[in-house]
Image: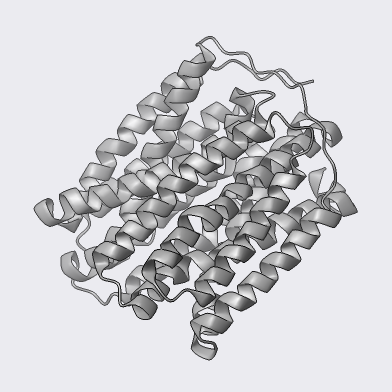
Length: 392
């Protein structure tokens, strides 16, 4: 079992490096809007442009790094470069005196550091291919993804707590030092891995199937982003309750999504991943329809099961599925999966900007329902056209 093998030092080093990188990202990203607003007195437009430009540069850099990594014999130099770029970006954030300097650091070094996250997952998949059987690979990938998600449970809260004790100069200096420590970890203890030769058989043209998966996952993550952005205003304006309830709702989903993610990994060792991904796509349809029709706060809490199912199955198994669809292109596949999150975040912000003012925050969830149904149809088609993965 994968949990027994996790006791080996190479696997532990992969888990630790990946989790630490995700944790550092969770300390940095959520604080940046507050940093930009307070340090540079930036308005809402400038803050929005900061994150949009970071997301766009992250998409481009991630895919370039992914394609490049597949041509190399070892991904570790790119991972190390990405982590060190995180240190540089945080150092510049601590020293920046103008919005432009911070923006340039964000769209270059910080985007590179984010892009290296997908490369750690690609490296981990290559290591798993040479160390585990097919069932163990699925569980290994899912466990790695769950640990990354767990890093976000306390990371943002800890970041804001630390900001109460440190100024921006000291806070980002501290994170820069932690990035350097993580760089050393990746440089000296991350185990080597060779390129695998696993194959996936499909009835559809590979490029068409990958495009369908990319669009569907981007739509799912767009729905999730719009859901998160709209939630505080939905509970206050539509249900007339205190904004703190939005935090309790998010916390409820977070508390159950990681066990569900591990459960999805266990199911992935027994059933086709493409079929399980479809379950993750169907679940949020129930969530968004429920939010659209809800008139009482209590109804929203059991609906968080659907929210957790979406995250657990889509985010937990999605990367493995993308990697299976693109054999021998693990780096590009991992980057492509992470880019569905970036594209989804941009689309989600556009949904809020386009429809919330016009229709209200309740009807945002009707738009989400339509998008989730569209994504489900695409994924059902992809699952139907995807044949059983050949186990080496």
